[in-house]
Image: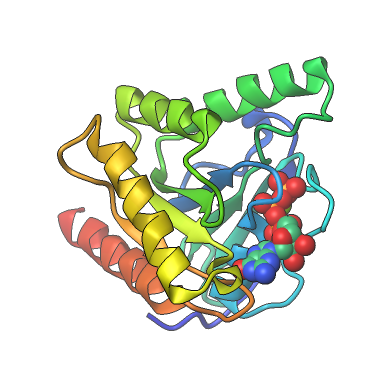
Length: 209
Ligand code: GTP
Ligand code: MG
């Protein structure tokens, strides 16, 4: 699939403020600073479409970006959604509670959400907060895949080791693993796999209509 255009639509501070649910959407979630916004920019080949920052907690709203909308045809295109990060220790308790409620509403109620990419920093051992979140997704039957980020920071053998550890951890609970993607926004690796997956999924959904 070719990304012909990408445009910011809106930031929503509440599930109810999200744009009308009339297009397929693919969302990105994970700990603060894991690289969600950077990955979106890499996928659409736009440096600053989604705002990134070295400081965690940059994205605090649900941000919709519309991809491949055809001019004059408002029913075309699909959404990429940048979600706020979780597990940001310096964030206030009120903020954390708010994160939980509106992202939970979004993830459970958004019936046009096709697939959720859960981003994991490839440099770290499996973190409980991510594993808990993955368990919750599986429990709620929300389709998801795991995206390992910042793989440019690891050498090949360290990366392989890190991947193996993660897979082993997931295999403790599940026989079948979710799709796994290995990415670096810096080196632009893993882009084609994710874009092809989205393209194929969109086609399958269209055919089933
Ligand atoms: P929040 O919005 O705060 O939840 O963060 P985020 O997950 O959107 O992370 P963001 O994309 O803002 O990136 C956080 C930091 O990690 C920035 O300094 C990025 O430049 C850096 N970063 C993101 N992706 C990569 C990557 O693939 N490789 C390297 N080396 N750095 C990356
Ligand atoms: Mg962000």
